[in-house]
Structure formats: C-alpha cells, structure tokens
Amino acid sequence: MAIIIRMPKLSDTMEEGGIAGWLKKEGDFVEEGEPLLEVETDKATMEFASPEEGYLLKILKQAQETVPLQEPIAVLVK
Image (cartoon, rainbow, N blue to C red; front, side):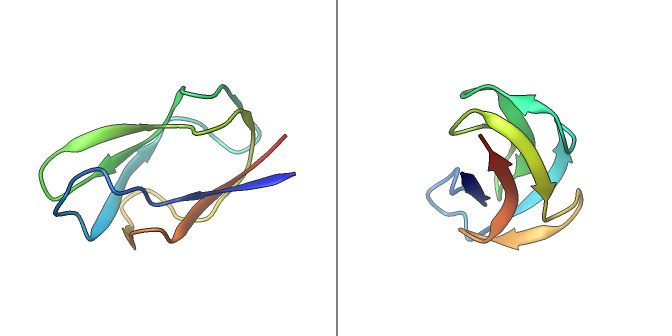
C-alpha cells in the first residue's frame, strides 16, 4: 500500500514550505514518528516526522525546493 507524504502545514501563516534536507534516503525504513525531513517554514526550520511506518520508496521533491502546502513530496510503502 502506497502512502503519499504531502507538504505539511507547520505554522498558521505557512502557505508553502522549503525542503531544507531529507533525513532519510530512498529505500530506508522509517518508523512512525521518526524524523523524515527538515522543512523551512516562514518562521523556522523544523523536522517533520513520518505519519506512518514504511519504506521510503520515492522522494518527489528535492532539497532546496519550495513546495505548496499539501503537494506530494514523497511516497512510502508498507
């Protein structure tokens, strides 16, 4: 089963987020709640934890890209 990871809203005024860097690489197993990437908001850089466990199948947006809220950024598989 594929799980789409979308750009999260990490602050009330955030409209898009920058991907500061991925903490995992494609093929890595990620536990639920484990930091997956660092997101730059309009106020700070924050870690975003994986909402579910699975293997990081595909990174759709690379570091230093700016992404609108809710746009897919990665795919996990069970």
